Image (tube, rainbow, N blue to C red; front, top):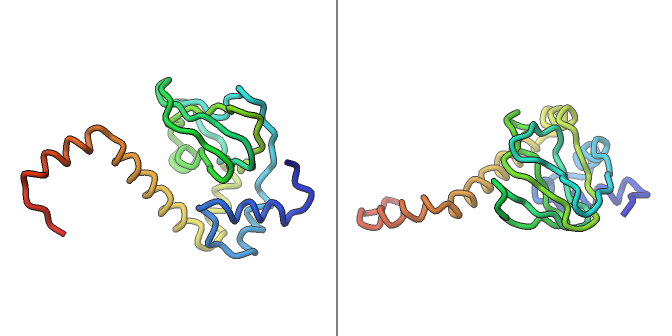
Amino acid sequence: MLFHRRSQKIDLLRKVPLFNKLNKRQLNEIGKYADELPMKAGQMLAQQDKRGLDFDFIVEGKARVEKDGEFIRYLTAGDFFGEIAIIDGAPRTATVIAETDMTLLVVSKRSFDYLLDTVPGLQKKMLVSLCSYLRRAEMASPRSHEKEEENDSHPRRA
């Protein structure tokens, strides 16, 4: 899917949970810095333990996420990845591989940093998104289930 109009890019960005509360002007600003890239099935989009240089939004297609060689989940249109590594500068936490031919919108680290500083509301949306990610990770962790069992014998506070 090649974007022939800027409005198509904005329509896609509006579907990304991270951006769905931003207004048209804010989305237009983000769209200026998002490059459309076609990817082939089998192509590695991000590699665990390597430095992340971009933030990626899936326009169309399907990708597989792996951590330490183990399947974690699939990503599809509207999903995104790369936000953790470009925010904290640490290596990527997972590998992402294209399962099908894909189209991505890609924002470089430099552009992403600029957008965080200049698009009102984006920092807060990013924090909320990262908190959601952490909560999902905690719930999926075997250690969180052990702690729940341990805590069942103690009274809980609200």
